[in-house]
Length: 439
Ligand SMILES: [Zn+2]
Image (cartoon, rainbow, N blue to C red; front, side, top):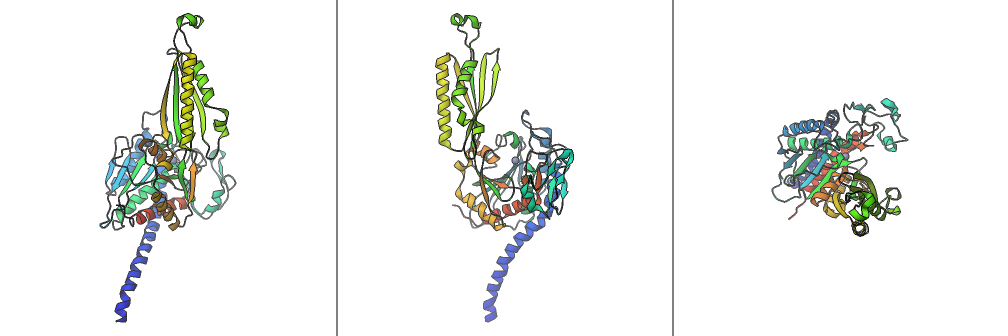
């Protein structure tokens, strides 16, 4: 009898610890695939281009490689005509409705620094000494204190003639490894999962041609932040505003008679009224916004002059006040100079804080802690795919660390351990979300 009573307890214990071990065994098993995968991706130059109509040939090649690799896993994959790669994995849970998790990353690299012909160098058991790259670029503990925590671990750099492209091939590596793991281990319980790999993030266009039909999760997470548990929970809103004055042609010497009006005066007037000294970028830091008159355009034939403003603000009310200030300045200029002015607003980023669910953050932070990471929550004076999605579609997301370090530089480097911990975190999220039940 004793034996019989004891057995179910022991069995239950074995099953539960067995499941926990299995998860950690699985992540450890796939760890070895991550560096070769990352090294393969960074060698495919996929810089985006501000002047491209949409894609560069390098991005097309990268997209094709990713699509074929993911399709071979046997997962439901959709390759859109705009070269987004979507994977929608249905839930395998019978008894509950878990939230749909969405994961994104971008496969382009910045146009601001050469990212073609990347020659990655994998440094195993880093010894703490300065790393000298070609063209005298140096990565050392002084310029990069986080490197001190990499002693004895694996890092990857470029050879110094290009950037590395860990931004965001590290995020891509994490998500492709996730997909492979789920495909090869169909007994891992999970709710619905949506993954999207996007082009054009570094030219601010990664949400532009996103199709909601394939990516509209309950909780969204972008894998594109740095190291050491960094999570971006908020960002400034970004509006690009173009104000154009339409002058009236004629000889200026006879303006009193022929109605000639120049288009420069009204634009100078509006610029001065709107971009006040204390709002300029050089007087802004932390969570303060700024107004920058970024550039002017003049067309002498059409007699139009325009100013291109950048409004950046963390606080919606501040943004509203600035827009009102601009509207009043435009009205005043129209009256004063007797010309027509138009205003065009292009919403670039929206603060993700306005469109996230608190449960999405607690799922993330508990999954980070379970992977042994202290969450480092931050707000950023920049935009991410999450904030571009927020601006266009009204749902926000968190941006999660990937192991990329010092992006957009010849001295960019990757922490293998952080990239692996990013993968571990996403696996924990999948596991923990499968325990949730949303009605
Ligand atoms: Zn990025």
